[in-house]
Length: 111
Image (cartoon, rainbow, N blue to C red; front, side):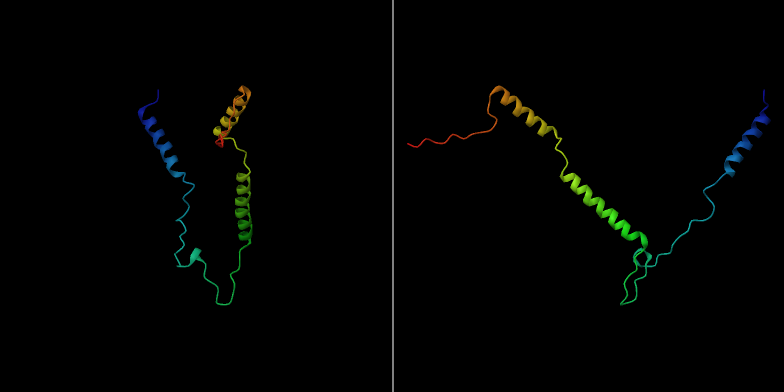
């Protein structure tokens, strides 16, 4: 059997090992002071255009291209609702029995 002092020493050693291993806390977090400019970018001097970064055009094409593609796909999506299925099934069953499924108004007889 282990003595209580050996057990206590083992627990102390294991707890101290757990406390020493801190991999994510290397230094204080970096903080950007607010400048008052939108996205921290200084506006260009008058008469000059803003220079785009390399990733900006790719982001615009990807973002709006994906939205256009999704819109087209949603527009042409097949109708899989329960209501449309039930309507087709009811029409087929009524035609099989010889019943009319569309309302036909009776024209008033001319007297």
